[in-house]
Length: 383
Ligand code: LLP
Image (cartoon, rainbow, N blue to C red; front, side, top):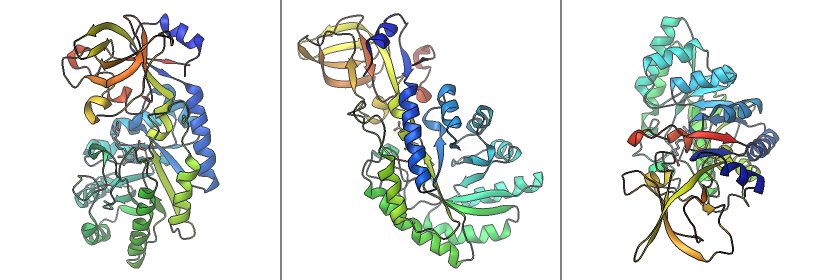
């Protein structure tokens, strides 16, 4: 929901742009912080969801760690002020340069995704005369029941090592004297709304935690990744996730030995609801069977609908709400048929110049923008 003042402000700005409500962000961060502290859980923010500097600064100030998936994300996190001792680095394809830079920065932990990667990190750490802390990312084969493009924990995914490869990991670790195994790491997918999925993950983690103990590894860290979904249909009513229920599942079902820490890597749930893509209607096209609203924002600014058929709530925030309701396909200006934000969206009758808000766009929105069609870089505006 946008106040009158905010809408008046938008009317004086060139579109499209991302609008971030820093108030919603703060409320979300406070709520997550309070709930995680209740259980002494550690939360790392997954930078991949949004690395806009203002957002990162707010998250860093709240005391969260950082979960990075590229050397540049590691660099950015440290520049912003995240404590390197709270930076974890995941990714199936870390280059030697990225590993070396992370070693230079003494990051907390590498989440390692293959047996071969263990050897490479060991070799590079040896050259630098360092011990690298590592956690093995294990593919738990737990179905996240989410869109197939964002399911990561099934056996056929490229991520992590499979359970049958664990004996080989243990052998390799014995050989690698410059590695310290501190934990195991999991991530089953994103936009998970069924909390039972996290319970299944806990049961799997318990099994593997014991497996490692039996082989002499008393792990310090159980990193269960991220994945908590948000309510794309009700961005105002459910602006802040129920973090307490989420963490309670882990508290209830995850067995921890004394001193064992539980780490999370939340992205979407921290930033999705604070962001909206704000756009103007360029043209209204009335066809025989369909009406189109052509916006000045497209898949180059927000790719999720085109890429994952993702739903985002679309609102006309300047139309008179007394207007009759019309069904529109809301599309962008890009030369691709998938450049469509929503089909048969019911909106008050709309006209050229009206302002459209595409909600819950704070996560995987701005960061996935592209320059296709030589589009300009999308700007951002803050509350
Ligand atoms: N940890 C790891 C290892 C991950 O791969 C991810 C996300 C996260 C944490 C954070 O997950 P979250 O809490 O945000 O669900 N672009 C897609 C989502 C891709 C997620 C990739 N990995 C989308 O727009 O839905």
